[in-house]
Image (cartoon, rainbow, N blue to C red; front, side, top):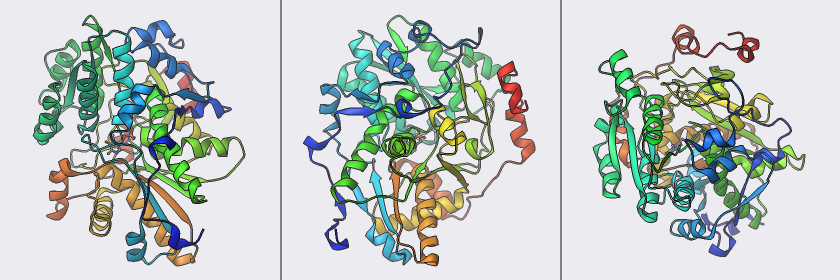
Length: 464
Ligand SMILES: *Cc1c(COP(=O)(O)O)cnc(C)c1O
């Protein structure tokens, strides 16, 4: 196919949208390690997990064997309101970078939540509704997940209770108002409405909160109310599964034009968009059919893959959740208050952690001023104001394209543009005022978080 015939935007037809999610665990020889019960240190059973999570989602969480899982018709119909999402050829960015590289991005910001999170929110709300639940509880950091879940719950008639990290609650009043408009109850976390919140407030008075704290509160709220379950917008394998719709659409669009990517890049917070984007390609690599480079991009101020340890750790600050084996900075890790660029979770999805550990994926960390420089440059030529999180992927896609300018190679680069940044203007403002500083934690800083990782036998080999 000659260059000119590849359009700026490749849209699939509705009829070409995926009918199944793809479960990359089915193709992994080394499966991700199971979640453990923090008391018995035995793998969490379906029954134990069902006390906190919806039944069908627990099944998906534990399913390491089925390659394809049906997307129910009602979810597919909801997807049609904002999917298929476009795969965009970044001709303008290529021109500006004067690179022979071919750059594509999958844009997930075309819905009110402003991110890919709606892909999993609607699935999780659907299974909760089908189970006959009254409502769900969750945490939100920057607010995209809380917004997505509020939208999905409003659509399906479920109650939605969101614990929002206090600094975001205060800095992003409009995010909060969008959630309330969709009918959600939003509580700043840590709060005095839960026991774990009270405990955290007593230990850290005046804290602005963290995702780990808000998770603990949301879990407690779910288990203390009849007819409620807890849902999570990232980190879990079920979320990665739902997000595979991103990768499946990307692959279908590329296949229509016979395009084979060399490098696939995504930003990594808890790992769901990256995992979803790369899954079908990773499957080919795992099955020995094709080879690709996969790059996870994380902030230098919250470097779980590049500087964390691969061990069992708590998923939350209050230590009420199961233990997950993952790359982690310790559940007590809090990124520097100067960090404005999102992606601040201390751990990483266990499937991606295993793939990274086994050498199937690379990871790099980037500093936030370089991320905002990339975001600004991208916005000026491609028109979209990107979310700071997404801009981590833009940074590295641009860096790889600039390397191609040096070597003259015409590599094909695909990256995930996970969302828009309209609610992140405080962060953009700091960058525009030249007040954004880069903070890279020292080894001593990281040691404080790592010291909180539980010391049980399985973790000894990691030198803890
Ligand atoms: C939540 C979010 C991320 C990071 O979450 P992952 O689970 O790592 O994908 C990235 N970009 C946007 C826009 C988000 O809302």
